[in-house]
Image 1 (cartoon, rainbow, N blue to C red):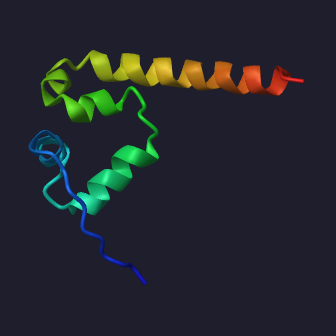
Image 2 (image 1 turned 90 degrees about the vertical axis):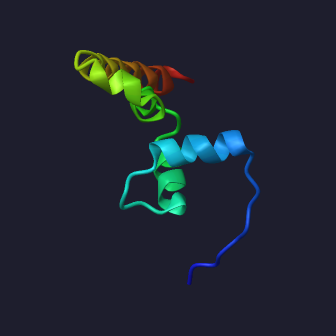
Length: 80
């Protein structure tokens, strides 16, 4: 069962959510999408739509995230 909660947002926060919200998404869904990615660099492309115009940027960010994740796993595995 899903419970509905009322929250307060500043106008700035509301406008940011509205800007990255897809037409078929509810505000709950956009929050879940953004939060579940834990602030990954690829979220920059959603937060700043003007960056999507640079077609070279997305593959660069994706590659950086993959390499960072590999290094993170290696670091955690090497911890005592």
